Amino acid sequence: MTAANSLSADISRADARRVQIRAAAADCFRQHGFHGTSIAQISKVAGMSTGHIYHYFENKEAIIADIVAQDLERLLTLTAELRAASDVKAAMIERAVEGVQENLDPGKAGLQLEIVAEAARNPHIAEIVQAADRQCRESLAATIRAQRQAAGHEDNKATLASMVEAISAMFEGLRIRAIRNPDIDRDGVVLMFRRMVGDLLSQTP
Image (cartoon, rainbow, N blue to C red; front, side, top):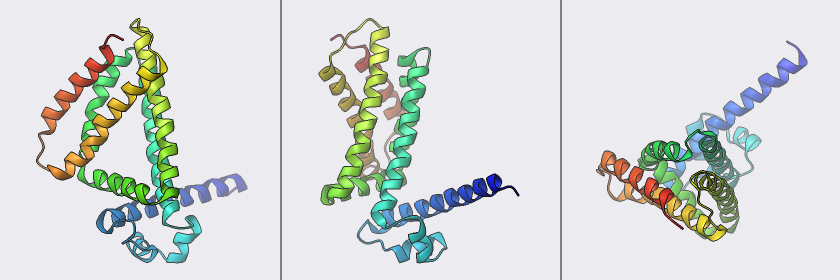
């Protein structure tokens, strides 16, 4: 094996370990909360020593930062794909289905709500969450601006920001609904969200 191949293999193993730790931590955070979870618990679920955990993550906050970074990367990829679509509005309406289903997933919803709850108490976690949110809002605003300009609308920064907040609140609010009402009519919500996203993107300034 060449030095380059060896380095690539090491990186792949490290990435796999981080994924393993991230999944174990997410499971623990969902079940026990951030403060109720210890590194020892995470190591047990991950099937590795606590020393191995600390080799990849300094503490629990670092694991949350990694979870947030992964979510951010996924959302930035999504908005970039939407901007590249031939019909941005149609693409946003179509992908709304995925957004509804994902935010109504009880497991994912529980984890996200736990992270937000910790951000309300922990200034460091708040900085991590808020920095990621700023990047998401900027990317979504650029996507909406592209769609609106293609339709002949010129919106100021405040209007775009309001649209972004409205869409964000719609989807993020589903996380609470997923917990409060596990029997929610998903198909009905998807249909309503497709209509609301379409109406919002079509509004006259």
